[in-house]
Length: 136
Image (cartoon, rainbow, N blue to C red; front, top):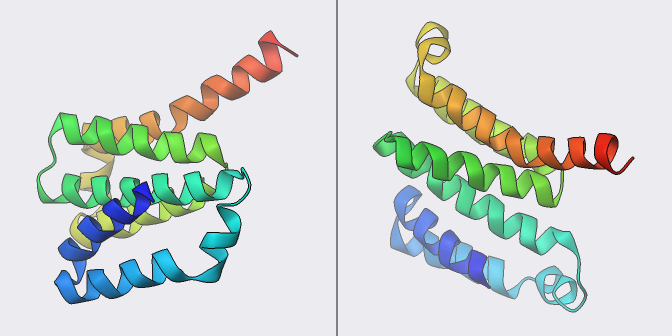
């Protein structure tokens, strides 16, 4: 249900109020969402975190401050930590948005882009290192 708030805010930024309402109706009333919420699975949490990650990425693109960089990176990292397959969605969102506004040279020189990428990988990297090398 928390993802619904993020989806509404994201939809208003991208497609306006009417489109956001249609997206919210699909998100809340599709049968899979009701079925998946009856048991504890990582997918609903991953989807919710992905929605908030996308919202943070869009807000970062509007005004790229360090605070928004950290927020977008850590939200993406938490989504990846919940379910690793989220890395493809997080990376796809970043790549699509960044290449729509910057060229490759600007991206490689941008410290905020590197910081967001590192923060997106940090939670899962910590979990992996702990699981493989500390706990075995």
